[in-house]
Amino acid sequence: MKIAITGKGGVGKTTLSGTLAFLLARTYKVFVIDADPDMNLASSMGVHTEITPISKMKDLIKERTGAEPGSAFGEVFKINPQISDLPEAMSVKFDDYKNLRLLVMGTVLKGGEGCICPASVLLKALMRNLILKKDEIIILDMEAGIEHLGRRTAEAVDVMIIVVEPGLKSLETAERIKKLATDIGIKRILVVINKVSNAMEEEFTTNKLDKLGFEILGCIPRDELVIQAEMEDKPLVDYQQSIALQSINHILENLLNYHSRN
Amino acid sequence: MKIAITGKGGVGKTTLSGTLAFLLARTYKVFVIDADPDMNLASSMGVHTEITPISKMKDLIKERTGAEPGSAFGEVFKINPQISDLPEAMSVKFDDYKNLRLLVMGTVLKGGEGCICPASVLLKALMRNLILKKDEIIILDMEAGIEHLGRRTAEAVDVMIIVVEPGLKSLETAERIKKLATDIGIKRILVVINKVSNAMEEEFTTNKLDKLGFEILGCIPRDELVIQAEMEDKPLVDYQQSIALQSINHILENLLNYHSRN
Image (cartoon, rainbow over all chains, first blue to last red; front, side):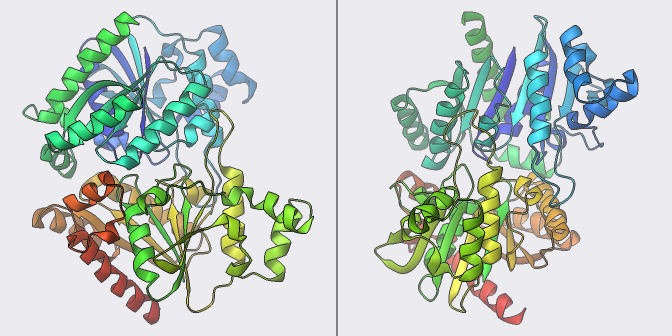
């Protein structure tokens, strides 16, 4: 299964992506990819080493195979499009989660160097060409907002999860994402409501989403432990008493049920 | 003065941009521009009409002057680079704020249509060529994250304000923004701390910012009225009792003092 997590900036995409990755890695082989040039996924998963981005993959393939960049990338994945072909140097492993790998798309290293369109093209090709085994899951933590949908970065995913929070702004973004994702052929779109403080906020948001025709996967309460985890620089999955973590566990069950039905 | 408001997604850039615009419009002529393709500024300022984006400016100039797109845009602003040359159709007026205009850069209208690089180029040219009068202020509400700094969209601003919130993620982004903004020659960089729940969070964030060498412009408490304003679809400036609004008023004074000193 290939999953993309999208939504307005700050709704909690990265926390959800990282936590789902940790939880899924108990049962599946999980590859979680930071597709946001403003990379926060690694640090939110407790990783502080430098990671070679996918945008450097061409160079690595050239190094290993002697093939010219450009053609080489597509070729390698056409011949043997398996996740095990991803250069080892490009992913981070976790001591406590043997089945989990973290990758990053790439960032802006110098002001004025240009956009991240080329890195997006590489990631898109990778997502399109990879053939997953039954026990393999890819989670893409997308950049905030909608530009990646103009670029089709996530067009090959099986499920897109849009994260929203109470208030109209992130719902506006969700509507835009749904429209643009449908344009590029993504059919399975689900919503997670995050940072819910009270029943009034949940009702407000659920009603709006129902009217917009969204299928809701679950609801995560506002939880001070999420902020505390971040300030203590540890992943949320380390806080077993977190009510947000418990909700994400529940959302995971719903997601797997949804996937087996669809 | 040309101001860009930047920061990680969801930290409150749009709320700060819109509220500063309303407050400044009591004394100055203010042009507030939504530079985020995932446009939320208009709705957060209570505007729900469709707005012709700056990305369509070439077409409008061609219509008015008969000149070919491409060269025409630069020419118009070289001959008479004043904000009054902006086509009227491109900005929204406010009944209660005669000195305020809202503009939008442009968005992704169809999934797969491409990136927003061309719209960014237009906005960059506009920002570089406009010569402001003393009583004119431009506020740019930038897109979340760092990609706009690769594109130099905001290179011509006088002051860049980075919004952060308690937690490491938005501070990581702030560090990246500062580095990239310095690369493209932006010298005056200030920070606003938003969504502060308690003294511990304020101290944590202030200490981190001090260590990173940031100048702090002010601090905005977490305020349920910000969420309420959004759910009731009204601008924050309508909630006179809001403690967040009071803090933004204070930040505005600090900004004007800073500007007159620098």
